[in-house]
Length: 471
Image (cartoon, rainbow, N blue to C red; front, side):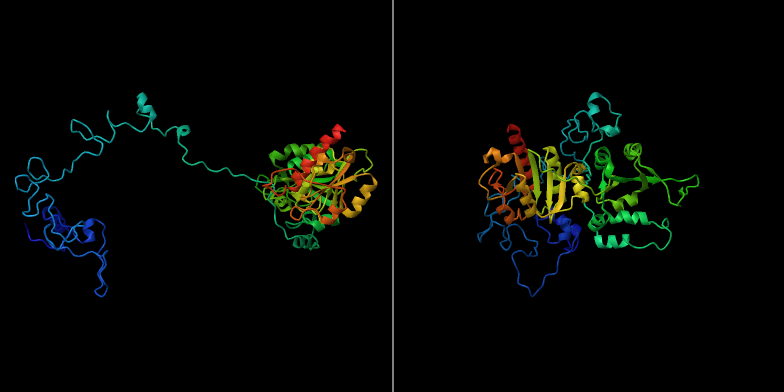
């Protein structure tokens, strides 16, 4: 055997196969490509540290196998004395069956090749390599499996983006109102914020709606509802459009020097209906519509209407009135209006501390139908209850501590009823409950403490409508 240098990786590998089956301590010999760390002479040796292996045979007692616990090492063939090679005749032989040491076959066949003719074939190929294509079974080998766009596999479905109309735009109402009240420095038609547009911006605030006596109705369905049933309150219609350009790509201006726009295609039916009803239609830019909208994803149409309502008729023989105590979510109040219209309610009395019924979200939540329900707002509910008592109404309050359902109340008391519903979090004011005639609780599972105020109002309205029909 040739003289070997421990610093030569090639010779160490050669020693591994031709020597005593030793293991090199150089990590680079194992293919990791890193240098061994220099041991610290002051550190105490641990079991996890490697020791340098010398060129010793398997029988050397200084080097013990993992299972050796101090006894003499036994060779692989079980002989404690004379060391024997792997061959039966005492001669060391290679792994080959014919006794001749053979090198590793570099042209060995890949895993899974079971060909009998010695020809190298791919894994799993029995009749020649086939393309990954279903049409190969039919004899069509020329067609690539992904050539057809319709047959391309979809590995990941892109999530569909959904937009919700109830996403609210957060406004600084005082700043908007201050900007709307800013006096004109130049002509009205100059700049991107003319006076007429600033007046519309004032209607996006609570103070501006109260001062002007107007409100904004937004959305295609809401505008259509007002055009159909409440044309008398509509002042004007504003829709989004695309800018009109001439052959030189310059903006086409009107007589006031303002840019002109053409309504968007999806808004043409609404525009045509409004013009047939003699409503003033104003086509403005999409950016201006977004600034007037109370939602992030605007539908591009809104109407300016007068704040008007009809007072309920309390003298009817059979009647259902809803008393609203400090309901602050505009979505809930809008749902209460829709439920009242669905069950032929006489009207709604909105107490102080509740959301304004002309709030844009209340208008959207009711789909514009709130104008078809007679209502009064900002009423003192104690005063309203005393007035209803004079007209023969039974005041029924919803209470979590109630002990009866609506069907357990005497039928004679249910001809004229006023439901009292309260705040989403705190519930109905206790003093109002005390002056009510009856308290009811909706039977439900004990796992849930209470229902949404609009849901509870819908359930009671449905039950009472059935009872009054039977009466």
